[in-house]
Length: 465
Image 1 (cartoon, helix red, strand yellow):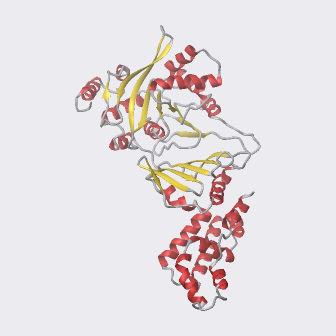
Image 2 (cartoon, rainbow, N blue to C red; image 1 turned 90 degrees about the vertical axis):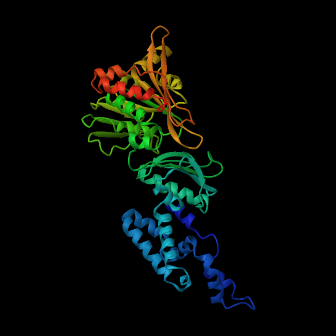
Image 3 (cartoon, rainbow, N blue to C red; image 1 turned 120 degrees about the vertical axis):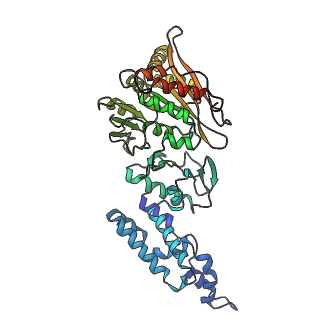
């Protein structure tokens, strides 16, 4: 079924119109006059569905679809004019001016925008939107799931919305290819899955990202970590230490990665590699962004994260920032970090710094059958620090651990030495031992010795612990 056919099917009237109701009551004896009965039913009829049915009689939606392809702005103006003409009819006299404006905006959002979730997408306090077919819509705010009052009329409307999102990107969604990942123009990440893989109906998930990158200082204000941790992280970036940000889904990995990237000096060339563009560099003057591409409808044209990592090495990068390591690109990332591209950054799904090693070993072996100790030696050589982020029971996101990564030649194992920890119910964390990299930072003149001493004294004080 084409997109236009889906629109027509979704827009088809599901119940008798007001005019039809009037005609059916003409033969009833002893009732009020037909005009009075129509007006009595009008308060219930002042809905976007009623407006949509009336507008469709004046301006068929296939005409709107054709106009969108030629001139989207004209299509919007034509639909707005049709709404104005319909709302000027006597049957809408009891509808307030504000309600008419609201109905017009809702219909425009339904036809050109994102329908019931339009306002949620533009609400920066909402971080995730979950559409469970026509059954329910949930959104996440401040780490908590909230059931929205908004609804889609039926599953077909959800399918129309999904098609509207993915068609400009050259993607398709059907029974042969029932899953898709895409990106909205404002950068939000979209995942959709439909029957038969989702038997209860089409499911749409939108991960929202702020339009402006959050800095380390802003994360301190949100109690993700304190100023002592913030200063240490900034030193690591300036000292060109390779950092892995690990954590679970929705724990704030990308947010922290973006904040760390903002600390990279402006005279360095940054190459970012992502599955879907999420990182934001509003201030840095020299950033090249690369985005992976899935295979097309014919199964061709795929460009993976691994392909982009290999290509990035030929682009004279000072820093390589990989949005997330998921598979075979891990081996290329390790080799890049271990052979002259210090200061690279990436994220990884892992429950703890120790789990990072096991995850990396597994991913590398997807791409290449190497001995475990050889892989761990690469990890110990490539990664300097692992920064673990977590999500508390109350929905808050915080930095829960910092570990130093090294390779133990005697045991032939990669070792994660945790130097900072913070529990889910603790207002601040505690430093387990003095970071061994501080001497390197002083030698590189990233920071002065007296500043390091003052920082460590403050880190060890009872108040900071």
